[in-house]
Image (tube, rainbow, N blue to C red; front, side, top):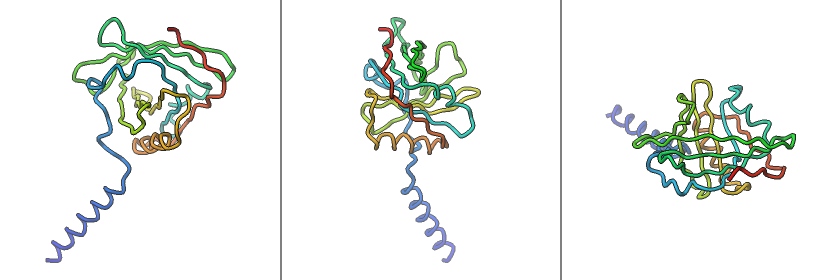
Length: 184
């Protein structure tokens, strides 16, 4: 009798702990099932997260802002990303890469980086994209939005997702200088 009561109390305790957790294990999106047209157009890179002392955010610390243009490739299952990075010294640095979309896959691959996986996360922000990039030496969470300014509640949601992934180091991109324009 006491054993059954004890199991019931532990069960209730487990339910209470689960209900208090902000982490949702089912917040990843399948890359093959997303509506690609929703991702076309201009995006701004707003924040990144990683574990402390991993070095995964170092590349972003020289940035003041970054504006992207996303478009579908003429080669079908590819998305082209063209970026214009404004460095803190005022210079503009162009970048370009291609994400490969594979039917049935839950993640994106980056052309030229076969070990890099990119996962998409769901968010309550209707004009945001949260991506997790991992490869053999790096793991980080990235936040993009359609606007360079984001409501505080959506930034807090990004920080909550980061915490659930074990990322305590958050870098918000300053966005103080004029934006460079990505090649159309």
